[in-house]
Length: 115
Length: 113
Image 1 (spheres, rainbow over the protein chains, first blue to last red):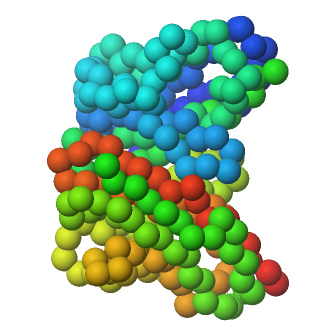
Image 2 (cartoon, chains in turn purple, blue; image 1 turned 180 degrees about the vertical axis):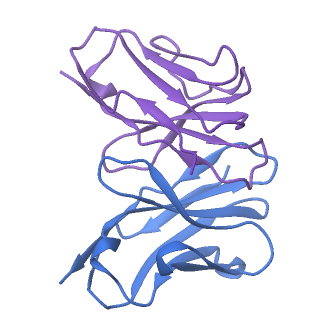
């Protein structure tokens, strides 16, 4: 069964350093999401792509976060500089199309710890 | 905008007992509703979803949920809990024509032997 791949699974960094996370969605899935999940809370959307275009990045802290999906396939989320409050699980999800009722399939996530 | 409230951040049941996890939603249009499960340090896995049609939805691992429009609820149930059901459960809502999916804060289910 096809899965969403993410790497690394765990990342420890010091504040003010740069970090990057990678996501490879299920093949053929045009829509890709990045979520942030703080411990004890539900996921919150950071950015949504439709193919290579950003559909929604209203909740992305653009002073330090950036996301790209250059060829409309895999995607990278970057934080520079990292802050203590960025410690969280970063989840990537994909779905076939922009249809709202379609299922989002989640990757295993990257757990970030900022020291 | 749509929102979700999960009543009870922690639920504890004995093995073999009924599982009931509560979810209420707010939506200005007919919603799509989802339940996801998350095991420690893993991503979210879809249990079931409601889009249209039958209001009682059956999912994986013996779980089911019923969409009740009059009560704006989508509670998750399982007749008999198993130790392997211990996990975090998230209810989510999205609206037709709206790309945004909103998650509840989650309910941690503990299953006692």
